[in-house]
Image 1 (tube, rainbow, N blue to C red):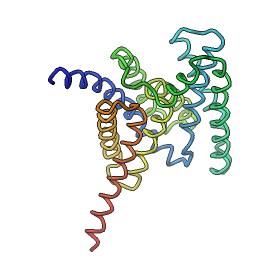
Image 2 (image 1 turned 30 degrees about the horizontal axis):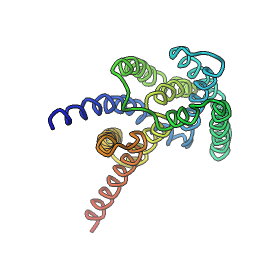
Image 3 (image 1 turned 120 degrees about the vertical axis):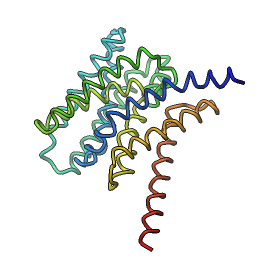
Image 4 (image 1 turned 90 degrees about the vertical axis):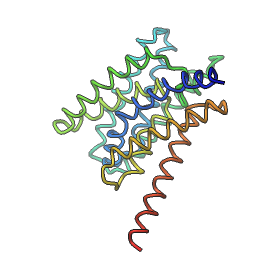
Length: 254
């Protein structure tokens, strides 16, 4: 029994650390995305980054490192293109971002249509394989995230356009760690749940941490896809927080 519990912990803990690394950058960036009113920017950029990996593989680039570089360059190019839309109304921006997402998603499908493992690769890109991450993957990711956060805090008040390449690099790395869907949820769900809260960033981190802990535990105990389980757990945790805040607020009013 003890060995089973330890084995489960040994699987869950690196995945949980990966989730915390993703949340480290995604919570403040999610707040910025909500402030700018470009909610689906991250989803589109994540899909563009995934397309970059597929393109790299399709043209014969099999080195994981080179695939990452090509994915980041593709994502940065897409982000800088979207940065040019800032002069348009938010509704127009969202529409074009949605079109870019659909093009990137269907582009990946077309490129993987003849791949016998194409369906499996698409699933991995969307929901990730967080339970199979190794510590060496997290060491590299943590170094990149530290640099990203340093540049983020230094440059966000100096250059508005700097947000886009930093965002693209972060999303590309996170997509490789946890998948497209979980990247979107880490950015939007905690930030949205704490949108009008005091000390919002701390509460958002708390929601994210609890969501990852619950989702990963459920996925291991019931042998469910980890990324999808965390998405639902994050949503449930954020919803529970919203209900709790509303109940406490109404109690104070009455």
